View (cartoon, rainbow, N blue to C red):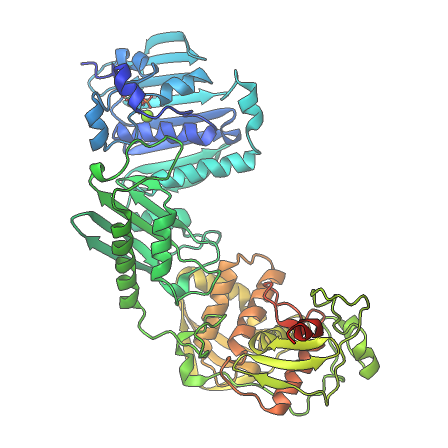
Length: 598
Ligand code: ADP
Ligand code: MG
């Protein structure tokens, strides 16, 4: 029995019209969705030149009859709905019967297809909507469709394609959206004869890890927390990561009834659930699957749009937020530590740090003017005069004042300094009041110190009274192995204990009294998250993690000497204004601003 029929115009018009095929990625999406609608268990994608030259999809689905093979390329030909009301109970990916018609209008298409019940299959070749060949052929059950020279007859479209790199990325993005909802289907993706992804059938979690569990993407299911909520309105399940596994570039996916969707409002719900657990620029990865009655969502979805409207978004927002919060609550065993009475700390600190608060490591014999700055030897201050050189000026500080001249901010070791609140040091200068963020200042000073030690000499080590054990998953063991020489240089004493653990006997002196394990975990996390691939890059990450771990917490009061020492060391840095990540350390409240107030 032939199953494809033409939709009546009335129905066809109810479906939002739209350009279906805009780029190779949209073509790939339509083809793969067709394979899944045809119940394929194995889908192979073969791409050449990011889809410009070839986009081929091979499936082992139900195939088509000879008649259907021809009809499939007609506009509004679909086997999936026959009536307008079917639109409201859609459970297939495609339904418009537009995709193949649109594709064959702008490419050279060759398809072979066979149903299990047929002895022979059908080969059909169409160039720009003209059928150039249709014949009986022998082929496996399923459908093999080859789209060559996309937009061969639409030069404008061809011109609008981006670089192969970008188009390939678009192809993969589209591919991820689909493979994440079909973990039971086998997928492969080949580009220019190279296997880019090979995804065996498995569970959702296994699929997520197969796609994103690599150092570039950094999503590992070991950090997942399950969420699950069933209500009359909606059922929500999926995975969110523990707050400490948040990253700068997170993978955030919503799916509804087996379709990827973007939903900025629901994203807000997830972010709200994490509020207070993350630093500003860290984001949690999540994979959240909604199941909802098709009547409750707008099904008249534009094929290239991924935003979907729900009937009752506010209620779902609440349900989603509560669901994520609850899941996180279960797994956040230790309360978040907050040194800052104002409740917003800049850097997430290891959780068990309460037992050993970081100390200011102050060396009373330290004299900033005798220290050789080996990282930036040309900036090493030698005496008072040279210290003034390159001292901050209003221009350096990036603050506009109406003064035309460029005065130097004086700094004497008798200059008054005050600690203001829990966060700042205030220093009067010729230009106004210089506000120094104490915590950041300390990070900057320590960062420079650690970088120097990593580059040139051995950092001092503090022997631990009780050796600690660092247990790690396989991939992190490999990472630590890579970092080992640098970790030792900086003052960690660690030996491999077993295939999945290290014993730690010593810690860099600046971190004395701290627990070594969270400090090392922070290093691993930073190296992974920021994709440090070269030695220089991972050294930066080591230095940065250590600086953050060792820096004075906001709440602590410094002694006069500690404060002065910190300011002098800070101002001796070549860039004392900003942290490596761009956060500002100092800010000038200019005389002009002050005078204006009176
Ligand atoms: P739609 O998917 O919206 O129905 P398409 O133009 O994508 O429209 O496909 C038209 C029809 O061709 C489908 O309804 C289906 O019957 C048939 N078809 C397309 N691709 C396949 C495939 N890979 N396997 C089996 N049938 C297919
Ligand atoms: Mg389709």
